[in-house]
Length: 228
Image (spheres, rainbow, N blue to C red):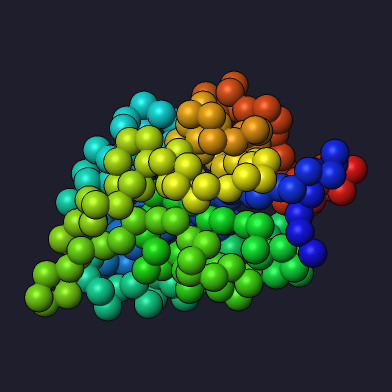
């Protein structure tokens, strides 16, 4: 069964991951895990959170935000499994309530994130979303398994990358973008979506709300809008 707009047109949902599909920002949580024994854990995590907030509010280009956060992380491959386990428990409440909706319409839903496929794909899989429907960054590792950065050949590693990644899908259907960050709005701004929906179940950013077509307090409201 394919998704359709209220007007009966084919519809694709483009959904952000951090603070939208999940309640939390994954890199912030990875920092807490990786720096658990570090004497300056709280201060470093606070710096990472500040960079996250500036990036999501559109105050710092996403490529700079990502690189600066990764430099502070000091994370290793073995930190990823504890992060994945935590993120499974932190899936947004209305996503959990509507698991059947995601499973039924998985072919018409994409996760588009400046986060990393290594932890996103396992978290969305129980909701029927295949790895091929996860557009995200990928970590780079050294020979000891330490995270050294990100694969800069991927569009999501660069400013404007979300719009480019959606464009490369070549989707003919109407697209609605759902997210909490300014980078989500930029998909619509670039002409790659009909509507941008500010998702505020977990966080509301005034600059993002100012450019949204409408606000969704949870996924129930989005599903109800589709059904009308």
